[in-house]
Length: 335
Image (cartoon, rainbow, N blue to C red; front, side, top):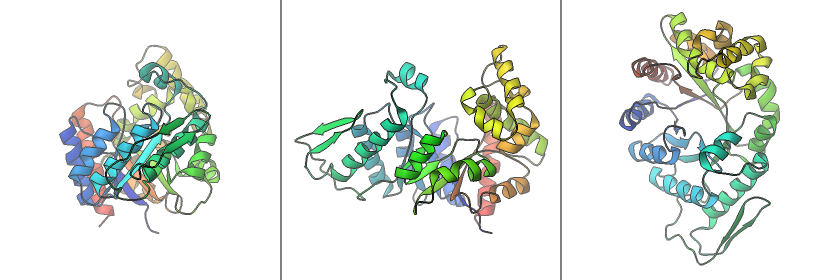
């Protein structure tokens, strides 16, 4: 049985360390390196990755779809595709209401419909910005009317692949309908992918399914699980993911995490409230052989598994060690 392609989300205490990790992942055989958006700007990090790498694909995993205009997002995608020599993929997600409104001053309205229109407007600009023709898009939420503009650079490709992140059923279905790929939440088991996600994505040819995975590898499986506990606790504190935990028979365990959070523990300090079953069912943790076996369980379900080390509640030196073990596993599996 062939393994899914291995993707990698590099971590670094500095941007230079993040880039160095991406280069090592590329040399080890990672097919794509992804730039997240939280503590750094995804397009800026992706630009640095595109300039340093030569063979691996580069993606934003994920950039916020509504915090920038579709026009600016399209220009960034064109620049990144040029910088990477056609290796770029634009990963977009909506974010949640509070983040959009409180952090970015963006009005929250019908996110699934708005993302549909946003993607259509981005594709319009990518395809036509260099022609000098008018660029018109009149959606219910997204509007675009550009006259007298011509981007004086030919695009590398007529289209840039767009990957959509989705957790809820409507957003997953949208990714299956209009996306070039779908990117999962960091906690996405093979059973959940098979029963809840793939039926909603459909089987459209060419759609790439990318599973994001919180991955902790240690020769001591207990230490690996302890490293991943903080990430699980962070997500368990959010009621948005109640269906995910309930599907895995972890509703009571999630409730205990929520109670610990309400009791005053910070979101990145909930590791002690996380039951071992939550880690075992929702993360790729354990010895190298155990993690390799867990990756193999996605064969036939996902086209790729994106590995990244847990970070919540962990000091940089521990994250660094965990990332090193992922890089070594990628090299071993890609030989």
